Length: 276
Image (cartoon, rainbow, N blue to C red):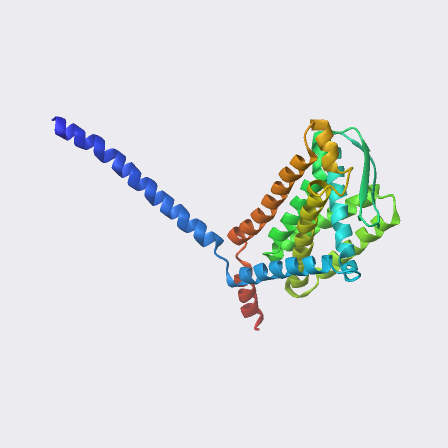
């Protein structure tokens, strides 16, 4: 009887081990399949790469870099709006939101009250999250339309507290652009503008964090204020926020590859139904 008992105890772990290996193999195959880009997704990835390269080139060319100024100001608006949203959600009384044209393309949000530990990092992290959300939506026309409505509402919200004409003009122009692009064929124009805004916002946040904290070109940034309150280093805050912003961007691309694969099939079916 003893050998039989021994046999029963050794066969059970081996079968459980085999089931575990099978589950891992299935999971690995599913992940590989999910992250393998379709033909259309490869085009989106190429466009993202082209946007990144183009933005980096234009960013460092004197005079020509003014082309990016309106998009930088939209990113500043999202930064300040993120501060404002965090303040309102934590009980702050919001007084004003403003954007200025100066060498730093800065912005300022005035409020009283709220939770400082939530409000201070919200500018960088909120705008990087919104940028990542736009990058994610860029993999799909319908998702781009949905996110464009969210961004439009966010921009319109700044009009409630806007105290200077530049903030109002930038907000109205980009809301008008979003509305106009809704009527482009199949929403393609809207999709690639949303994607560009997402890439621009993500890169600008990354550059801003490095510039304000790691290179220490700005002595009074959100990171330095947060570091004083927490008795830590602004560089430490900058590194943590930089890593979070990078995670947002990478996650947006991976999630877009995994979950937004239907555009090509939709466009093919719509073309057949319309006779083209």
